[in-house]
Length: 245
Ligand SMILES: CC(=O)[C@@H](O)[C@H](O)COP(=O)(O)O
Ligand SMILES: NCC(=O)COP(=O)(O)O
Image (cartoon, rainbow, N blue to C red; front, side):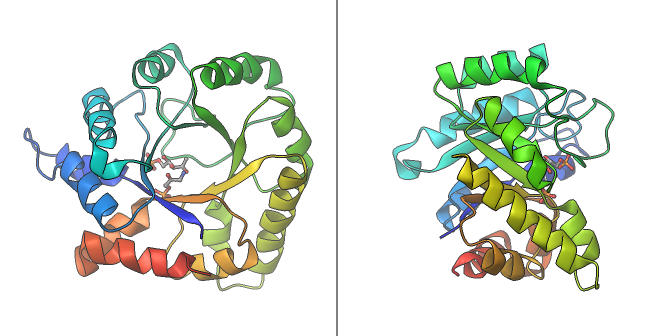
């Protein structure tokens, strides 16, 4: 079964609008894990617009609790000194490197490889030496698979934003085929497959059926939004039902 990692960024977005800890990111993490999520994901951006360093440290403590043995902590971000120092302190199960600029509204593209190989490969090596699994954010382009593998990364995370944007239109078939082809090319090179960005209860079943070998999807924005109507426990269970292909 495809693992669901719940991205808690948007809980922190709401929390940050007032000077107190409500809604609690830690409480949200416990809720989604108790509902069966395989792990949690956070993206501590340079401007701390949502997830702050203290959230990362607090969640690292939660993930060490016996009740959550076997669940994974995935930290996403651009590997600047701030981010790498935090990773060295926390040593999460997985690090997902994304090529985001500090002022980027959200993640919307994968790494430019092989151009950025010499920048990424040493960082990937250091993170793996720490015992972290390393995933690289990737556009759905089969030709990128070889360059991704050459960095030494363990997995790629296929960016599914265009899949969301085209879902339900004639253009979606080509986007989905590119995702399938990219995943197959990467798997053939020994890479694991993650996927994420703008996955929803509507578009996830088709993706899961087309690419059942995905290791993990990380989902935040639409899941947290849907929780307003379904409750956090209920929406996690609904997303997991989509993945039981
Ligand atoms: C990498 C990716 O697609 C998302 O995980 C990203 O973390 C979303 O960031 P925001 O929640 O800041 O939009
Ligand atoms: N890597 C994708 C992620 O963690 C969540 O993306 P989104 O569901 O918030 O778009």
